[in-house]
Length: 618
Ligand code: ADP
Image (tube, rainbow, N blue to C red; front, side):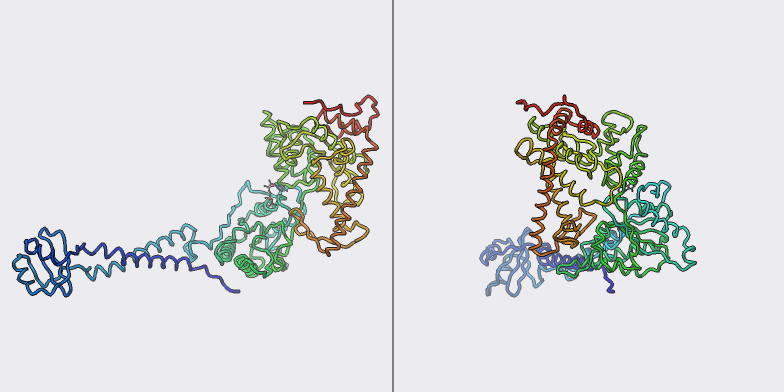
């Protein structure tokens, strides 16, 4: 593979600029500085001055006559005339006149110096600057201005380094990586039998699931140096710099072996080389260098490369082949048990009141990543401080989940009473539809306190345990639950509001996925119409079907959502009394728990208010 040399171009530019400055200096400034000023006068004035004995010295040249005034301050020049009386006139004027030349030019030595000296000075400055910059970059090697140095941060292992205990809930990943730790501790056990460790291990998973933590934990457990660099740090403006950074990183790592090199966000350099027009030369060269380096070192030399990405599908296949990143460790979002453990790990750092039910919190925080859970614990601690308490309580943790999901409570609620009524019916609509269907998660909490995220209220449903598979009925019920809010508005007020925009988006997403990806439509059966592009980052998908089919899909999505809307409307119509009762309760209280909700739903209390009173005028 072609070796890429650091660019020499900046140095050439520098010398070019120096040359221009020297030329300008000699052409414009030097003549001004070296020539004495000469005043040009006419021959008449010369004659007058001679007659008046005002001239001290005269020098006659081929074409010109130079003369100096008596006071010696001014040099005059005039054109030479064919004047036969010139000598007589000069003799009478008393001036000295000789063949000696009044020196108007610069001495040859000075002129030579004027050319050479600036060059010498500029070259010296240039050399000094480049030397200084290289020293600053940490090495006296030949790289221009130290631009090819890798700036990997080295974490030398310490007693309070991160260990596997600090990473909760990623048991499979930990098990996978503990083999590496064992190898780093005792390589002979592996080499004796002829086994070699994978050179590279790729940690893949959504953001915030603890990939960086796991890599640090491996280094912490194995007590070896840990080099950490982000993929984006290799990407440089000058072509070839990234590649030389890779070389430098591997050189350093080999010197410190056994050690761990961690490359975060490796997709920044490891993207597929698709050869498209406008491809990124620099990135490809960097990737090539990385591939070469990984091939270049022997297995079992003690350097283990860990890399993390949340876009594994975009990586170049050459990077993933055996001998490079041949082991892939998934680091997924934590399940219920995992979430509970992560909460406990982070709760160790704060003072928590006795009897906090982590399981309940973990259930409420379904779908949260490790980083979000860490954030929830921290928010709870901040809330406790704000309230002047010394311990974090269950209520703090519950409230902070809502903060992470929906933002802070808006203190100065701006809802009119009419709006509040609509929101109450809307939220109860969701909750009632969910509760009246058999395959829906129980309602945990309903609130109509506006949040800073813009939500005017929300209904929190919490699954009892882990949920890995969803049946067609469950998905349909979910769509019905999403449409429940709008259905309640239409049923009660006969008009609809903008409050359902998020519900509509969610319902459509599910319906579309059911048809295009989960094979849950009669027309298409088990044919995929859509492919997911990046499963860990929001799951964008692209359609892979004819325009005709796309139109069919759109129609089927509309059908599916309207069918569920009708179902929701039916449920609410059948339970109109309960709808009114619950909405008026929520309107009064603003927040109700799942238990309160269920007890009103199941009670047969005829005294309960039938409907909300007519809104009073504000
Ligand atoms: P990633 O590299 O996957 O984006 P990080 O490893 O940087 O995520 O995690 C960010 C933060 O989230 C960590 O500093 C830690 O506080 C918290 N965190 C994430 N996952 C876990 C976990 N499994 N156990 C404990 N803390 C976690």
